[in-house]
Each structure stands twice: as C-alpha cells, then as structure tokens.
Image 1: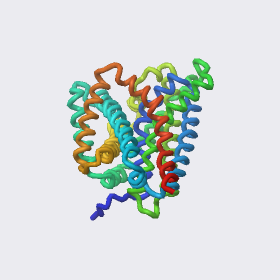
Image 2 (image 1 turned 135 degrees about the vertical axis):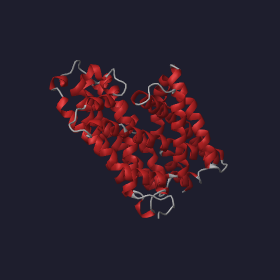
Image 3 (image 1 turned 60 degrees about the horizontal axis):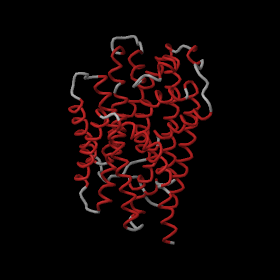
Length: 361
C-alpha cells in the first residue's frame, strides 16, 4: 500500500518540524520568559523569532553550498574532523534526549498517573520511542501526517475557549524589564528552536527536486506557525495567571488546559484529548534526537549497525533522565551547557562543511 523508500514529502516535512517545535517551546518557555522579562516576554518571543529566521536563512545558505545533506558532504571531509563533529553531535543528542525524556515522564505522572513509579513510566516511554526510531523517518512522517489536525484542532480550541478567562489587568507589568532581559528571553526562545539545525540532514530524506529552497520554505512556515501559537499562548497565560504566578508554574499550558470550561457532555472531557498535544509533540522531538543521535554514533564509530546504536541511545537517555529527576546539579549543568556551549556551537558547526568544501576546491 505504501512505498518504504525512506523519502518524505514537503507537507510531511512541514508537519514533522511543526510537531518538533511546538512541544517543548509551549511547555517550558512561558515559565522561563515570565521569570525573565514578564509582560515584555512578548518582545522576547518576537526577538527569538527573528534570531530563528536568520539562523534558518544561514542554514539555507549552507545547504546551497553543500548541494547535499550533511552526512553525505562530511563523508569526504577527512576522518578526524568527521569523528569530532559526529561525536559532539551525538553527545548533544544524548543530553537533549535525557532532558526531553525527563520532562515527558514528569508530565505523564503529573497529569495522568501520579502514583506510578518514575522509572517504570520512563522505561515504557523509551521502549515505545525505540520502536519508533527503528521504524525510520518515513513511518514517523506518516503517523504525524495523520495526527496533524487531531492535535492542532484541540490546541486551537483550548486557546479559543481560554480567552474568556483573560483579565486585562494582568498585562500591567509588575516590574520594568530592561533591554538585557528582553534579549536574554529572546536567546531562550532561540535555544528552544535549535532543532532547526537538523534541516541540514533532511535533503537525504526528501525528493531531490524538493531539496534546497523548498525545504527551507517548508521549515520556515512551520517555524512561523509555532511562533504565532507561542505568542497567542503566552498572552493568554499572562492574562489568566499574571506574570508572578506564571513564573512559578512548572507546566502552565497544562494548568491552563485544566481551567478551560466548555459546554456539552463530550466537550467537558476534551481535556483528555488536549493532553495529546504535548504527548505527541514531545514524543516527536524525543524521537528526532534519538534517531539522529544513533546515526551520529554510527558515523563516529564507523561500524554499521543502527539498531545497536539506537539501543545505546535509549540506555544513555534512561540514565540521564533518572539523573535529571534525582540529582540536583544535572538540570543546572544541562541549562548552562546549552546556554554557553551547545547553542553557540550549533551556530558555528554549519561553517565546517562550508570550510571543507572550499578546501576541496
């Protein structure tokens, strides 16, 4: 019924990236921004959107120079440079996967099964994620293509019905945020969208005629849609809870969802459906990092066997997620690493294929 050539369409690419963007940004950014720039977090979102667009244009320029995906291009770059690049990206994917798995597990326990063991929920989550990773990108693209409107419609319904709870008095700032605070918030927003980097690997999975400009255009539309959703969500959260309360919440979007009042017997239980917004979007981003992390490990080791490296990614992710939950210093290390090292390196790393391309010429 379906081909299995590991190729996806532009529509599937758009939907995959939209799911990757929405999950973590709508869960954690409102709290971070409220604590950093308060009401002025709206300007931080816009600034982060500008940073993201500039970064995407930069990645499009790199793709144009490579004329292929990063894996294919770096295969001719030389052994040591290749291993250093893939080694670092594998570490980055492992750290991100551990963080996402920890957030996902906390969300499941907080919203559905508070009494259940953290380790058991995490283990079951990673078992499902491992199956999805080994199925390949085409299978995941098909699933998320089917789920697309089933996820977005409840999200739009939640935003619409929550408008009646907005109180304009909460838009009056409790403190004056400076330019530095707004810029810091903008960098936070950009940090949540460094998933854009993975566009460098996508020419391998789209049709040759669709690569390049059309690929960047599809990802750009997914990014702009996410920025719009994030802006609407942040304004509604501010108007519902105020910046002081918002800064202290763990998952304010989920809390907002539980306060939405709807009429009708079926609509009263729509909150259970809306929880799928974050389940499926976080699962998509976790799978992305596990999928590419396994490929980075394979490229770095130089020994074929993708399932073996997928297993290694799952084990490392499990251990890191446990550390995130039970060790105080690990979350702080993660934030500092990506703030000062991880994100700047993801800006500089795309220059490597450009440099190696010039060297070969």
